[in-house]
Image (cartoon, rainbow, N blue to C red; front, side, top):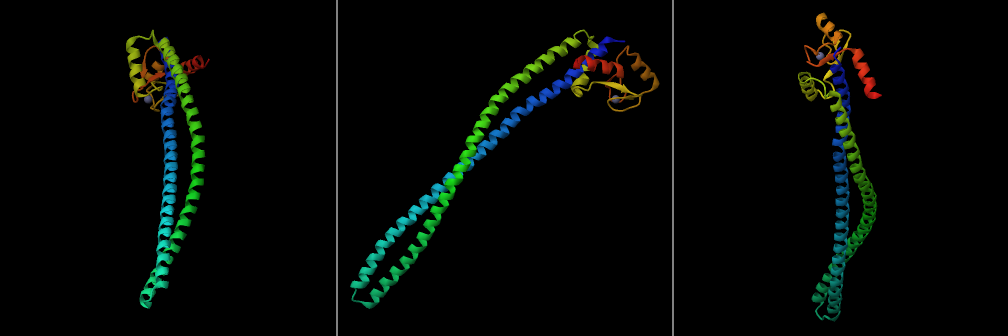
Length: 245
Ligand SMILES: [Zn+2]
């Protein structure tokens, strides 16, 4: 039996772990970006609410000012109506005063609605602000954890890579080249066990002669279909035990 085949299986078992580690490493910045985006959206919502509240208050204030100006105008019109000796002029003045009173009544109603709206918005702003504070705390904790997790995963990945190198450092170069090329194509799946009389990778049935050669395990035999390296189930199981243990 060629012991180098077992070394390839060992290296590949670590490749599987490295694939998982890399996936986790890749997902961390993605999750951080998502959380940061949610946080920014919440901040934008708070800004929007604050801006609408400010605009409501300003508009309400404007309306109150207009009411004040109209009140002065109404007082003048009523005075001139009283003092006027011309009945039709007095009528016109009273009529104008009445239309100003109507406008004031509408304006006061609108101003009150705007004040109520501002109050609702103030409450909403407080709610959103509460969420922002909570989220900021979570986000900061997550940022710190991400850094720690990244360091841990990176360290684990380096350890596994070093261990992988130690498994294959005596494998002859032609065999290693085949293995690494296949590993590039199928990470963690370059070597597969023979299952019954079929390739464990693609299920292709092997001709008896190839099966015998895989069982002999004296050379590198590849699946005629998927080109993966074939080994016996026994070698496969033994290597798995070694790596787990
Ligand atoms: Zn195959």
